[in-house]
Length: 109
Image 1 (cartoon, rainbow, N blue to C red):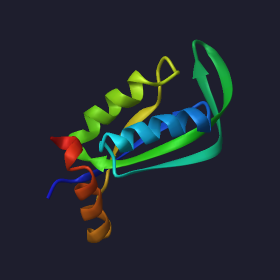
Image 2: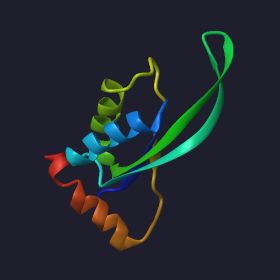
Image 3: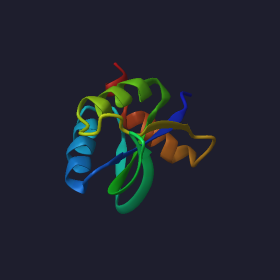
């Protein structure tokens, strides 16, 4: 069975995250996205220490769709260099993992 992955990214607002997340799920590139508002980030950008309020998005998909998900996030993102990390899933409930595979089957075609 193909492996599941989580794609981690952040957005500057819940509105932008919801718009992007819905589009990704509608295209069957992910079974589900979780959006967590209220994150505070401190980071270096162009030589300056920055602080930003962001929303985290966790995208649940299959490994073979990770590149399509990355491209979709990047294409519609307002950041020049969005955070996009693909995280391998090492285990989980077989029924849940099967659900992820079933819901993303059309996206992999």
